[in-house]
Length: 177
Image 1: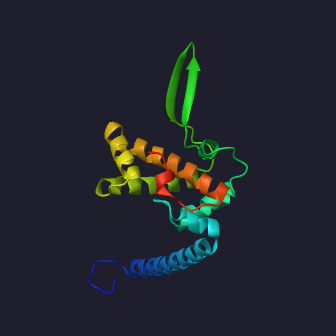
Image 2: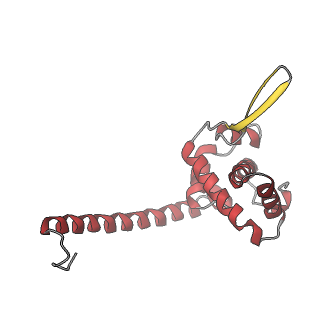
Image 3: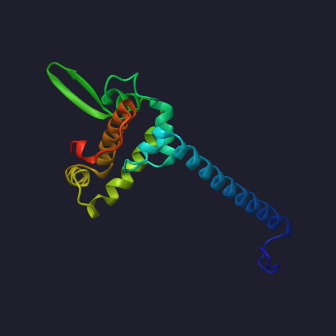
């Protein structure tokens, strides 16, 4: 932009410079909001506990607390996962049961956060040797990686529900693989 011999008109250079300043301002704003969100998630005991789960960061933890609350309005973890649209859709007639993709009910933003976090865990599972990583790796070998990520997101919501419902910390030994 500073080079006058680059073939760009002065008006276009001014426009690009203004856009660059806008971009820098927005980048600073995003960093400030990220810090604020981290402070909020660190100050809330439930969100702080949820961040113990793999694939759950400050954004997902606060969104889960906002969506599930203390977990008392769900009878079990599967209901919480179903409310977020992370359970398979079933259809059956004449003795034939068909299982389709996920129902996609509930909050699409939170579901996206959970699945993206699960994808990160799936991609790193081969380097780890714990029960959950072995389960995810075996599942990803049998099915598609995205199916494994959704299954892990489902499991994560169930564990998160139990942690919120009973006020417990994450114990990897209690999670069935």
